[in-house]
Image (tube, rainbow, N blue to C red; front, side, top):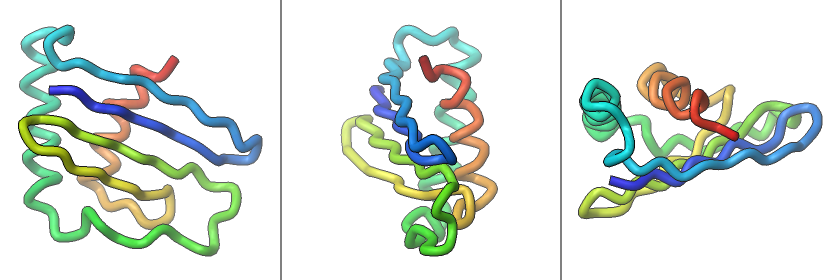
Length: 95
């Protein structure tokens, strides 16, 4: 599985991104990542619109390629707890 993760915005408007290949993660990390994605796939809120009020908030774009492709776009004001859990995991890998 490959994940393209991008965080943009914030007060300074900086964009950070990374590509995560699950084959390069430990087995525990692979399992945890798969659990996070399974939780998110079952969520009915994964496609919420971005907030128009948070000019200085971070926006997140996550492209998951795992046999199929799906994209999640969210920001700090509209994300749900399942998205937050995945983003917390992915942010530890930003360069």
